[in-house]
Amino acid sequence: MSSGGVVEHFSYIVTVFLMVAGLYVVMARGNLIKKLVGLSVFQTSVYLLYIAPGKLIGGTAPILAPQYTVYSNPLPHVLILTAIVVGVATLALGLAITVRIRETYGTIEEDEIIAADNAVQVAEDVRS
Image (tube, rainbow, N blue to C red; front, side, top):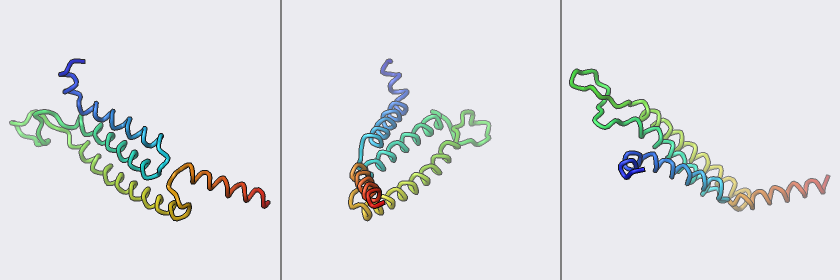
């Protein structure tokens, strides 16, 4: 790939990098806050994936006039605005659930939470 190709597809390269990084953090980390941050990075990469083709060089707003011949599509920007609002709400809910998990288990590490649940299950099995 020539250097011109890298410049032309820079937004896609950044998108793929953010997507892989976000997915790695979600899968590889046991800390619930780190998982939420990874999910946010992954969501950002999806936003970039939809926004990048929505803007055309030299394109204008879709106004029907004889002097405008190349238009940029406004639909991806509107959809991503909605997705950002949903993403913020999802992140807020995830943080609220993480706070409740911390209050219940005393930790936000996934391995420790699973171990605590297994210990409770074993204790219940012994009693019955």
